[in-house]
Figure 1 (cartoon, helix red, strand yellow):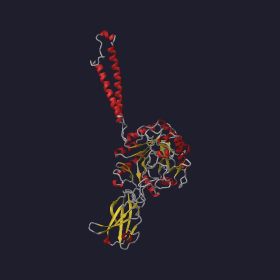
Figure 2: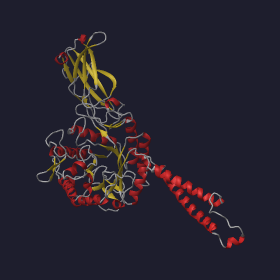
Figure 3: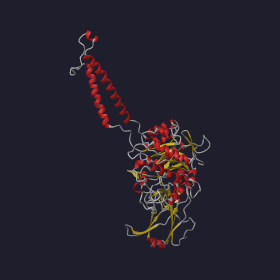
Figure 4: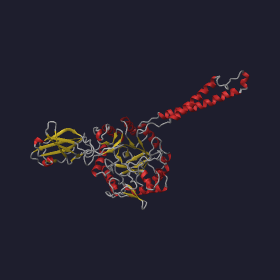
Length: 571
């Protein structure tokens, strides 16, 4: 997608053609595209970044959202690989400082995304402290968390950070960030809210959006406030500087109604109803409720008659009000709470205000919830510009994939969806979720075209060699094979040739024998992907291996041959 993404009312456009250029997408968050937090904090290799972006391209996702810029805690060693973050603070000068090493990794992500035709959504700062966020930023100024939204000094510091980022020139492309069309939009932050969970002050969001707009007239601006189930702030919806509103959808349950309040209203309703019935039926137990004794009394109602009428009116009104309150609370507790219904409710508000709406995160739930979310995305009644699942991890240059545990049984996903291997970090629902997303993309993407797939050849890495004895007391040679996978491969074929006079890497395919059937790389980073066990009595002088990736639509070339020599086998 060339050029900047534009907005017209609630619609986003990726080109000049208003009919075919309309943008709608289903894709994934790739939190570690610019820095990897586990198993240890380090920078991704460009090959790994390319693998992630090629996965999105093959999926047909068009857009990816990365995670925030990390904030370094005060006192942390700025030059340590384990503690360095994107943003730090110089107490001597009071200046915000960008870490050049980490930003060069973001430079690479932007360059490679552009080469794959992928747009990136970039949030500036995190509400949480996973990588350092608001808490760490306000600590620069010895201020509490909520001062981030109210304190002039802290706000000025954050504006300085925004200015540094927007004016940065990419070291690989020579393009300033504010002039790079690879960025779909700038997001004020991730899940921003006050420390007690209440909503981000709209005035702060508007001020930040206006500051971004004063520096960057090219990009769209997204409000990163965490709306949850509260609904969008009217000030935000009416602000011209804000183009996109967003929300995140997890299993938070339906909007809650206080149980104690329900109980109190219920008791008061019963009391009011009892008094109403007693007044109506002239119950003797209430001495002041008396009917007039004669027709004459009707013309001049007694105090008891007046009291009875008053009691009927007051108790009836109170009972009706209490009943209405109970009905409302009952309705609130049963309000639609599926992802799809929540998304459509937010989309309706955004559409009415002429704002574009993107589902920034959805995840950690059931296939039924994911289906409801994608069905909502498919609706043309209230246009939703995009939906991003949480989250995608990519191949490791050391073999296998990066994995990430989210919570409970939930793990990050991997493209194209690999068989479950929970012990290694591959979730039970990975294949089902990937298939679900892939099946919906043609429905939601205007002008959808199947991505061309030409699988690249994998690359065999240095093997792990071990010697052992099997249950028949035969000496065994075990060769642990590892390879850099290829984006889009569903499984691999591995071939071996053994002889006493190895061709040492020759191109001949004679005598190669395939091992196993479908071999998967659903293992963590650096793990052995296949163990080849050979009896030592075969007197093998050398073994040659090669591997290739397979998908439904493509087969990669064979990898370069890896030769394991006698010296390696004997060591």
